[in-house]
Image (cartoon, rainbow, N blue to C red; front, side):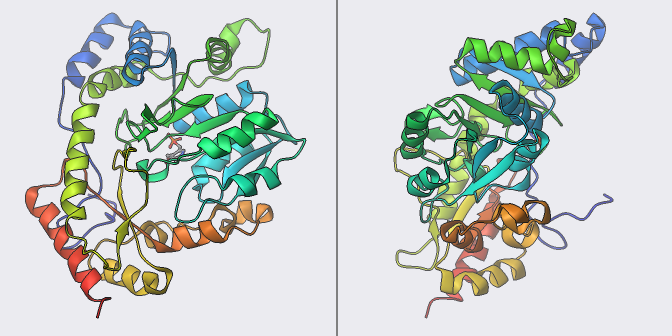
Length: 374
Ligand SMILES: Cc1ncc(COP(=O)(O)O)c(C=O)c1O
């Protein structure tokens, strides 16, 4: 094992989830036997149909990454150089990079206190005649209820797309994340709940938009009528996706059960609570996310690091987007996002974790929390 694991040494928890074998090799063997390995192979169309059926939408377009999904959607919605795209300040780099790829400007918007959802008042203040789209973000698979923001955007005629790259199966207002607004963009990178190694897809009920995305991502179908790129997903990766999609629901059930076990450790009135979401909404538990009061965030982060469970703020230097050099010129006052990024703790709860690994994490949460309450 050449690279350093995030959770290493004598720590029994690996945050990477490798799903058990589920017939992917048979599916790939069929693709090899068929001989068509490109994005035009029949298995890619089958995968798209299976995705659309699973999520309950009219169309799914498979592409080669979540970044491609976001970029192609922005292009298909008409985002061009000089336009502005609204994005929550909590967005990680990959959410905003495709905006730069369009030559457009990311306009950061603060979130509601303790939430991943856009602050509608700040969103309204950040609209301009150049605003062409907004990207909402159910980060860590947690529901971001953007209904209020969606109303503001609808009034301004600005399309809302969801970066649901971490949110396969998350439920917001009774629907899957990524299915309530103009499009949902998903990644199937190795770390995601549905993994094909690299890959992604776009969901939409808008047939016309789906056609435009399909056209753009397939080199304009070689007609030369309009500009296009090659973002096609290769057939062997679609074959993996077809098989793994079949066990996505079970994986999410497992994650929810593991999260529930860890949440039972939290004491009423203790320093840690779960990231708040509506009771009817359901995270997919890409991570279990706990939140501490600001005054206790630093000592708790240190305690989690000592425990071998470093939060994203330590592992990835996770901060509001404009703390990164290439986004620094887009800085705006976003106090709620500043607080959220500094006070959240992300824990693995994937089905690959054994009983003893979950018990170990539960124990580490207890120790970290007890160290702060007296
Ligand atoms: C929230 C979010 N957006 C976008 C992306 C980009 O996806 P990909 O790595 O498949 O390009 C990722 C994954 O890295 C992500 O987690």
